[in-house]
Length: 469
Image (cartoon, rainbow, N blue to C red; front, side, top):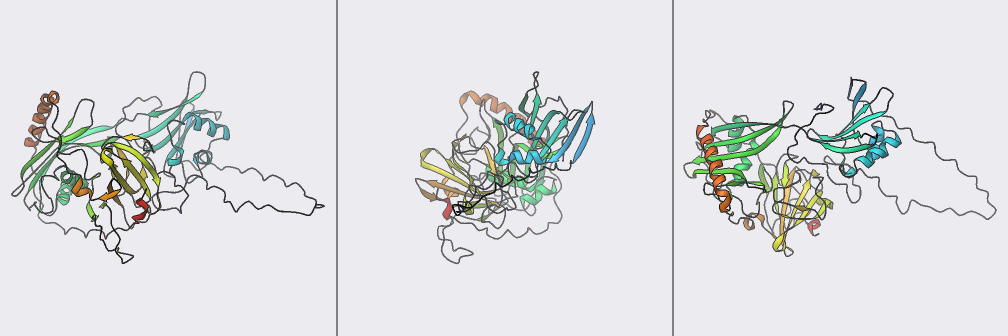
């Protein structure tokens, strides 16, 4: 969907959007999740030196004719107050400049726009579906330009009082709509959430938050109930996805009643806390995404499904929808972000205590995630994909300490820290308001019939060896 932004609209930006996957170290064949943007380096064997007899006469070769760029057909054309506004798709290109030229920029305009966007747009992360917007005067002069990565990530170039071009990121107004829903579990929690008109991926929030308290595979029963307070994010009436999950509650015969409340400390990122103000998470996230199911667990003695021999599976594979945000499991420093052989798009982080984490097969890597960058826990580092040697969208999550792979599910489960005493008063007030909202949330009628859950996807395949960074 194309979002119309007024010529002078000032709005508020929400959240971090994913940018496209980093360009590979050597351009691979195109795959469903990415395409090489940079032109491949010339082959060393391409330069052939011809020798001739001393008396040979060489006629100078004429230079090739200049390549005429044919601008792409605009998707939308609008006119207002002497300004023509046209929208083009970035399309496949050899690089950012090539994409601008194909979208209608003159050589001088392309160079000026690249300079204006130098600190904002990473040209390696451009994708065909991105949008290019031109605003031109009646005589064809460039008035303004926009590069649209997505609905909420837009970069704009305008002229200053001296007529010079400068770039900025547009802040897009995102409307938050608060929902309060409750229901009964008949088949699975995911099905029950779908019955309420919510995304079944929200079931992953319950699993993630309560993983140290309850096993949703063993302890849940038909007839259990749940409640959730969640924000939906909208731009111009179109739902983009979910924002904060403000509180969740699960009640059951075996589980009892368990609750978690979202709270943002002063100057800190938000997290879930229990009724006593202790963080539901420890210093690590055991599951750095909201996933559908585990398609392959940690198994040092796994028999490889393709090669039919013992080949360690040194991580956990979380099957999830393509593009599902992937978070940093803990504070750390990026040591690698890019293409890595059979692992596809890979991010590697170094943490305190000799730990390293790896996130493989990403569809995209966040534009702000580069080698040497510091990231905080829950920073979005990429999106679930199927790049590299993989048979379906999933995240391969691996953990190392002092060079040895460990099982993330058994290692990253320490108790959470309590809130500082200075924060407890504000937390109690916030919890009281959320608890009242939970208590007032009615339970929807249970489903009368439930279709059987689809079979989990077969085990995905990838090459572990290339994780040895």
